Length: 339
Image (tube, rainbow, N blue to C red; front, side):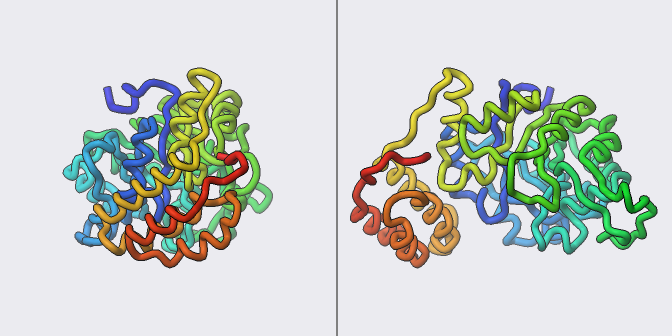
């Protein structure tokens, strides 16, 4: 039995995000009842060639387990080789990126553009599963439009009126392989992050995929999480942007699904989380960590009075002491926090 099968449902996962799910943020999320933690996604090429920056980026602490590292690339043999490296590093699982719309990923023929080539996806999944003993999972999107010439250089023979590959097309190609879990973002590549996801596509995948299914996209509140689970029948959810400036959302979702209610943090509690986050940025990433922390600081203060002026200070911080000094001067908001 792999770790996915041992988790209590519904499963709450921190979805992988470049520049966000780093060594400072992940332990915070884990402390708020997240069941599975994903690192930032790593290049198969970089891992195989011993890129030190990539190794540092995916380094994790034991208390974060189960930790999953997501790989991107487009060559089956490189997925297999890099998966072996991740297994040797003690990761609980390996995730295959067929869903990322990021420019740097898709322009190199990885991420969501691989959904145009279900048979290549199958080869990647099969090679990865055969290479390691730890569980393999997959991340996909609802669909992607196929151009006459694909980004992988192959000429499409698909008629123009049906030039779209869906999540179901990909899942049909891999459903007989030992994929332990699948996270589906319910929006198309052409609709990256706007609107409520296409739950009909998620439910369609639920009918044909035999493993653990996580629904992703549009989950910003505990109510969103419950709605997604109710509408899709998924085994759990993956929260991404909904955790920006709100690592406690996982505890709120857990409480809401369990008891029907949840608690919003006070301003003093939020400041305490911010300081803790900053301390971990310094501990794990030294002074450079504060540069990467700036976007998180801006997210933490979103929606409070005078947030714009406060952000102007926070986007320039370079030390822990500066952050502490700034928040010592910020009074508790007089209005209820919308978080």
